[in-house]
Every structure is written in C-alpha cells, then in structure tokens.
Image 1: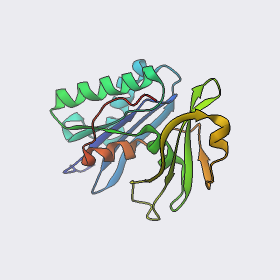
Image 2: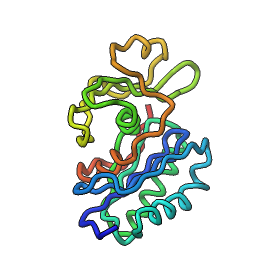
Image 3: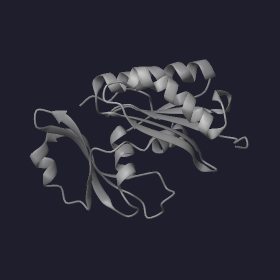
Image 4: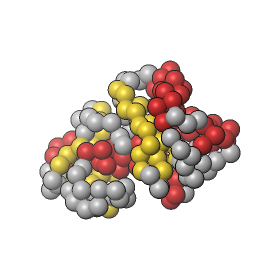
Length: 191
C-alpha cells in the first residue's frame, strides 16, 4: 500500500466482537477485521492489530489518529478498547476520539437510506438501543440519530417503526476510525 496522508485506526470492543479498521478519509477502508471473541478482547487485540497492519502492508508509524468505540455495551469490553486506544494514541502521539458503538453497529447492518434500530443485549430482558438513518450515499459514514441511545426493555425496542433491526453483528470499526475527524471525547458511555 502506498503511504496515505491521513490513516486512522478504529477499535470497537463493546460487543462480543473485536472490530478493527484502518480507514483513510481519502481512500476509505484500507483494511478491517471482525472477529467474534466473546470476552477474550484483552488477549486478542494486540495480535489482531498486528495482523491488520500486515494485511494493509503498513505499520503503526502510518497512523495519524485513533477512534474507539465508547459503548454502551460490555463494561469490560469498553474498558479494554478505551485502555488500548488511549495507550496507542499516547505512544504514537496522535489524537484520539470516541464514537458510539451503537452507531458503528447500525452502520454495519443498514443499507444506504434505511432507518434502523441498533440493539445490544443489556441482560435481564433489556437492551441498549438507538435508532438511526443511514444516508443515501454509501460512502457517507455519518448517521442521523432518530432516537438517542438508551437502556430499555426488549419489548419496547420491538415496537420501533424501522426498516431493520441490527443486532448480533460486528460493529463497523471504519465508522469508529472516521470519528477521529469529529474529535469527540474518548469517554465510556454507561447507560
């Protein structure tokens, strides 16, 4: 891969998936990885990052920013992602930004123009939920928030008037990487 002027790393560990992406505002997705790891994020993240860089034929020196999924989701998963992203951003001396894990989940499952609910299991019959509309342009990673994230009963979420429900898929870490340009705080969201 030729050198890219801006290359952002996206990390999301708020779900049972480890989602990673290298994304450039000029080229889009350079490389990505999505693995179902359950609760094994901490053991898998560093080797998977190395594989991601190898696939992209680049190295950490090329990264100009880090985006991280801030939840809501698994408490431990969110902490692993945040700690890793903060450590890497500090070591590489690049900016870090937070992004909604529900938005990354929605982006992974919604087609351009669709309205959908992104759901994550919150246990005891509850879900973390938000409703988004994906833009018609498939390259636009910004979602319109139609219902902000909240914790509610699964039965309430079932009544949402949407085109699609997105659940049980890996978040799109390219959306998380793209958040670097928005400079949102990298702080955990607990609902």
